[in-house]
Image (cartoon, rainbow, N blue to C red; front, side):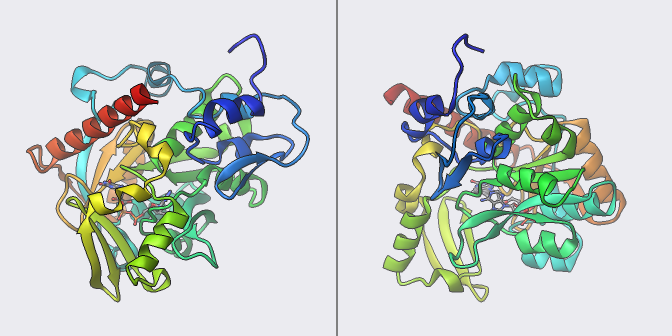
Length: 354
Ligand SMILES: Cc1cc2nc3c(=O)[nH]c(=O)nc-3n(C[C@H](O)[C@H](O)[C@H](O)COP(=O)(O)OP(=O)(O)OC[C@H]3O[C@@H](n4cnc5c(N)ncnc54)[C@H](O)[C@@H]3O)c2cc1C
């Protein structure tokens, strides 16, 4: 930590004005006087700052050292073989067995099935991403305590949810004490900072028991996304699923494909902050889940910690999922490594240019 205090003004200068704020919600979650609020996708000061420095030192963009965090979380740094996707113990292809979960899930329903087991075991809640009532496909954190709640959040929203605000809400407003967090790679970094950083938040550290990260190449800027859909004659409110797969961006309505374009067509919708993020596979989660690397309708699951191994094992033991070894060829693990390397290289280039 520096000698001079690093306060909200430093976050503004070093992160927000540089368009690298990922809007994970960590700054709002840790502010002890509720003075930092996410408004229109940006952290703002809405009252008097007490210069506690929590927002700065818990920000995953302003303050994050990969090597230091690997030592803290995994007790070791990544090996050469793990250069692309970070420290891990195993990788599998996973599919939920429950038809209701499969009907709502984005891919193999691994995330929702593992959460279901978590809630029927020791967990008392989870923070997932729902959507805002009046803005279709605008992700927002929701706190859930049942399978119905998990299913409400199932499926991918390609917009940002400030999910760490949901963690604070789960603790303060729902009095939950053992929660799971689902989030993008930047949100996994944010939660680890809050749990282990120089100014960690003990309430959050004690309550978060499982961290499930989703693979993420990018998120879309909400206004640009809606403008694009409108321009294409698509009513966002009627779309039941968006997919990014095999280099295509796809929209489905009533189960039918209504839009299918090359991913390059929608690249201009990507939020600026995603260009400087080099983490594809949610390297600091307990379990990372994506579709790349597994057959259609299956999820690829990277097990990184004992906590993750236990959660996955419990879901299998309960008969909620089936697990197979991941294909270690070009279309399996090779593709996960390739995309992770590509994202890291792109981010390094973007840093050099900025
Ligand atoms: C923005 C984004 C980009 C992605 N990009 C890729 C990619 O490039 N390649 C790839 O292989 N996989 C990507 N994924 C992951 C993939 O879309 C699925 O989430 C993953 O395969 C898990 O599927 P599932 O069926 O197991 O999950 P489900 O059982 O459907 O559960 C998905 C969980 O993710 C949560 N979630 C959804 N949207 C968000 C969000 N915006 N922020 C935080 N949590 C959210 C849901 O609330 C739910 O709990 C991306 C996910 C997101 C959110």
